[in-house]
Image (cartoon, rainbow over all chains, first blue to last red; front, side, top):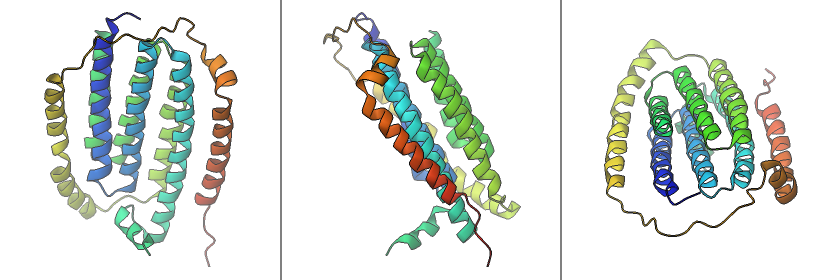
Length: 106
Length: 161
């Protein structure tokens, strides 16, 4: 990789920041549990993009691909488990709003 | 140039995913974001991770979202009306924030004169995964088993008394 790649990497960083902000905003601005899952998914998309860009810049895509594969496996397990929890909340409260989770406080 | 276009499409897809009202449309937007990310990963010389992203994130996770949404009953028209009004108030800030962050980032000067580490070998992903990151593989197996157990417990229908 030559020095020319740095501006390109910065561009990837900027767009990663956009996707990350969209994900965080999605989590913060809603009370719907499925939207929170979608926001979390967007956050991991940003992380994936940044990892792949770093691997390309450093000419070490092997390591970053291995990390991304691990990230994807963890992501799918987290989303599947969250889906189950959301359904459990729905069955108990008949709603997908996160405000009912306040009852979990002791 | 093509990469820039793909990144812009990725950001717009992410924005649409967050802003759209329907959960199903939001899920479709998320799948589209994954597809664009897959193309970017292919172009950045990461084909194996791209295949994982395409099959797992675009396929499996979309299926999980759609099944979760379909198992919950839809909202009544009155609830939809109330939520739509509240949503508009909450979410119109996001495009403004993104534009402000974009303008702010244009003025940030990042020093680009430090050298990159020399890495001529460029190990293959299979070599890295099977020889250098074996612990990651064990962790993945454990997490998958834990996830399968969790899904089996959480998605199970309760016995009605």
